[in-house]
Length: 386
Length: 220
Image (tube, rainbow over all chains, first blue to last red; front, side, top):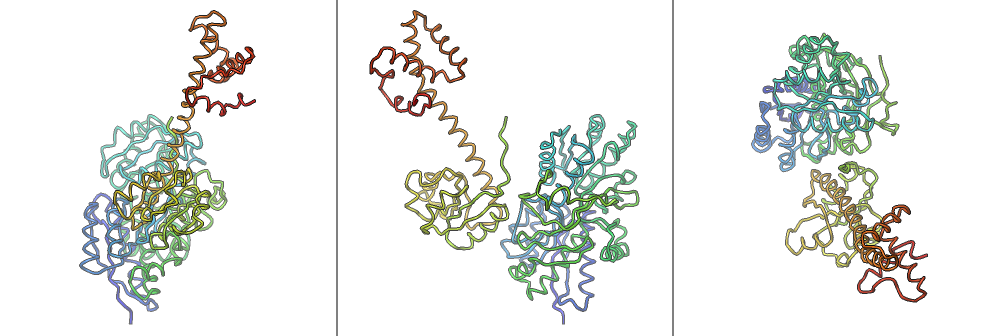
């Protein structure tokens, strides 16, 4: 007889970054279905879904409700860092565990969070190296006005400064802003080696459309002459961009085009049930990993008590679609393989480079830098696959 | 130019002087993740004074009144972070006297440690820079008396006016690439010897004479 565990899922499936939220939910659903159908699994999962609609303050209410009224201790949720910071004190207060399924900018470790997305040394640093190696060191930075953009831009800015590069422009916009005509005109006029894009949601899609149109009007081949790079662009978003979706760089630990038996099984299920959301994506896969790890940790702990589940999660390994993922016993982030992809017209990414093996998470960037001398994380570690 | 803010503390030696409780556990865990080498000591451990001389940052339990630390200069010249539980004026006064420049409230959470460390390390660096600048200015100020004396001697000896005498000293100091205060001291010492007397060139009215020994050239 399997024990049934109720878990909370607090994800914005509506609002300005709703597309990502839907992908996170889709990944979680696939994993829940697998766990519940697996006769070997010792637990089955019963999800309680809440949609805060992309409103930061609504996350706290949703989490408060789940942790107090419903007695839930295991929650999958949040995408933006501002929403995670909003709910973190509640998890500490109520001895609950947040499974956070997204890459983020780092500089946090909490004993109440398991981070199943990439840490900054697994996405920004590899992207900085790729840009410096292949595109030059004159950048234009554009982002949504919150911590994700500020911190990623700082990391890339310092990498550029170390190599004598320049930043031609740096602008931030409110989340959801789409009035970006003057911005793209300026960027096309400045002709940087690359644009570093930390816009999220609708702002990002509109920016890519407008920049492509402006570049074409100026006789430029935007993907080659004015490449846009990001640490968050995913398969879930490509269908929303339209004609301008192809040719953009993205740094991620997962792309739907990874060639492995685990990924073939994952993408087949995804395409069967969630094809309307675009192809499988990093955030969907991170949620899928989080739910599987959660089920394994709860089963191993034999309880949903915070300290026991956390102890069981340390060092836990899972053969994920992206390859082997290990929960770091020390900082509760995951060891993962950084990759650089380029978007294609069919809504996927062509993988340009990937690490030869999983890289340990370094959330405070103590060890990693774009000009790495340390062999473990150094440039030689990132090999070309095409 | 603005000085770069230090954000990476890899390899720094942190000394945590705190009883063995959950706060110490959390602190050690976060400091370790930040790349520091952590030494943990109970406040009453006899090894504290020695350990203090071998660390780059101190995190000190402000709730324990250590008499040893009340002595002036008991703490080394490193950033000091107070770990505060009791917020009474008596405790906090001690925190100020000990020169703590940042703090972490108990119970210690993983959030806040990085901030406290970053503020302490960078503020300490800024204070050291100011102290260095102040030492230089103090030395120059102390030397003004000798510059005046040298100007006067020159005026009498060579029949120059005040501006010309000062200009002579200034040009001479520039040519020899030394501070004008040092040159003035040298000049006065030479003048004193020339007069063959045991007369000291300085007027011993205050502590400026004592500071002469800090001057390398004078000691020869």
